[in-house]
Length: 132
Image (tube, one colour):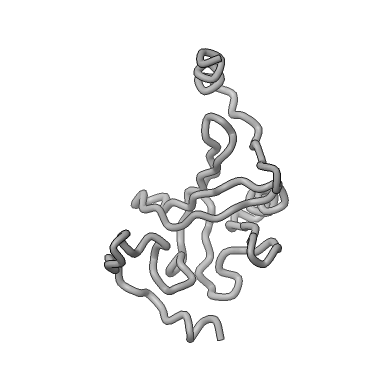
């Protein structure tokens, strides 16, 4: 069993996306130039299709139960340069050119705090001005 998993990961053909029981996949958005991890969100098949069709990142909001385009409200869109799938097909990586901050709280990355709560980044915009 261990060998078949290893061999499937060694295949040069990418696996089909393996959506979970909610028909979603986690997708990491990473800055294509700097390599900084910007955010983690989920995608549905429709979100993935819209992303590949438009070149703009689309995700699926589990809390709102709807498809959304990143930056549609804030203007901080993600231009997707490449979509990668991991060896098991159960996660995606969006390599993006980010306009403005990726985080809805105003930071460049959603990973702007340490586990202790220390803020380790500067805020790029005030969310109260954007999401009124």
